[in-house]
Image (cartoon, rainbow, N blue to C red; front, top):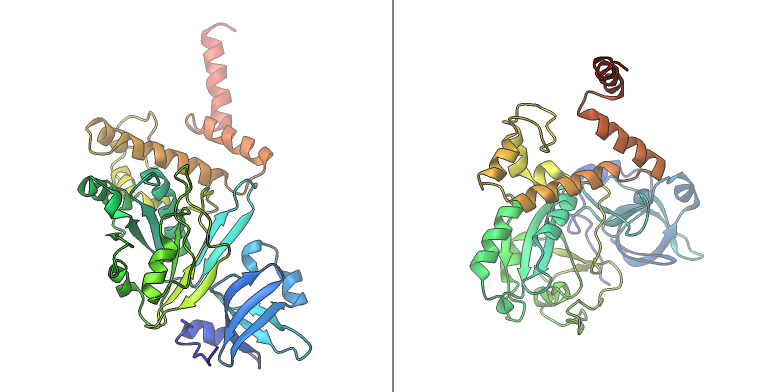
Length: 357
């Protein structure tokens, strides 16, 4: 690999200032079971985590991830040593499926995240809301990319529905079968800018990246007989495009558990309505003078969208808690409507007095 300029790879001034000593700066291009491929100004090197960093990291998100800028110590006897992860300006994190609060880094230092959803059996506005919450929370800009438009008979209706759910995030319909199908994405791929493609398997992420590369460098697997996508990308990998933009391809995600969620951004319409609720801590369940419930009753807000907000709010509330903590949180929520446990006890005493108990 030829020599690379770290500024052209997206290094920001604040990150460069955080680097100290004589260690070289590199950017993690891909991650393997036993190490990392890192791009440096001298070229591509293999690296492993230094012992001090391994022992100092308490959470999975503190370890290097694809897209991270790191400080490297050369090691003539083997792989270079990653001594430090430089500050991130964004971090895309999810909770690993099937785990209790175990976070999983998807990628770091992203400027834009393309949320890809196909207009076939993969179409699911509620799942899109989960992706939007995840991306808004990361610090990157979400862009919704609707693929396989050639398979959609009601494109205008789908665009209207997704634009409503996207709450201001750009929505781009594309057809990856066309030679210039990915052209609409290029405005986000300026030199030094980093984007990631996320979405379910089989939605056309690898095909779009191939269009941007101008070659079939990445394998694309299409759909299985049951309509679900095949996993063709098996690990996260960073790619430099001919125009200088940087792309991170990610494996398809069939499950998306949230480690953090920016519901205020992903559900900006609900947040705006909530400002007119009678109570500042309104849960939009049964409270009087709830502007959100009124909008649902008047047809200005789809009931399904409010249900999705409630589900994600509850999931986000319980993220990272063990079973005992979850039960305690549920109890707190249960008594919140009457002003807490202490007030609930007083209400019970008053009720018992009235009943002569």
